[in-house]
Amino acid sequence: MKCPFCANADTQVIDTRVAEDATFIKRRRRCGACDKRFTTYERPDLSFPVIVKKDGRRVDFKPEKLRASMDLALRKRPVGIEQVDSAVERIEETLLTTGLREIASNRLGELVMRELRRLDKVAYVRFASVYRSFEDIDEFKTLVDEVVRT
Image 1 (tube, helix red, strand yellow):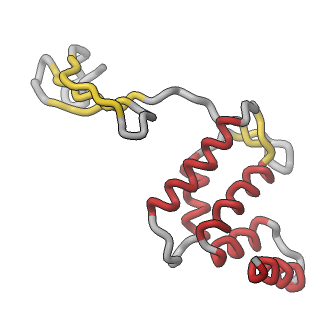
Image 2: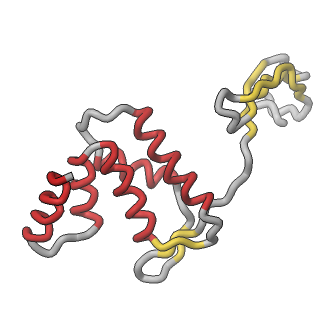
């Protein structure tokens, strides 16, 4: 592992710990040249399925884009960061465990809506109104009535 301070390749592990949830390994390292210490994290290298857009284009899944869209829907809503992190992790886990190499963007949108509905109904309605691109107010009213009933 290359030292982030001096770029020396001679570093040694001085401490290794498994994370509480056992999803990664944290290693403390020391550089042999500059003697500075730094932390590295070892995680499994998993690949997400490619997202197939409505127009047929294929794009890589980007967790930061998923998070940004959820943050936008949840803007100024009383939902904690930990809750959003957990929702994003559940979506990512679902994508990884499907075993599929490709997934339709509308399926991803449905996963996001399911998580937003759990977190905050206003955020769910915000996201759904943009995602489903309603043509008239009746479609929007139907969605709101559905949310109120549940």
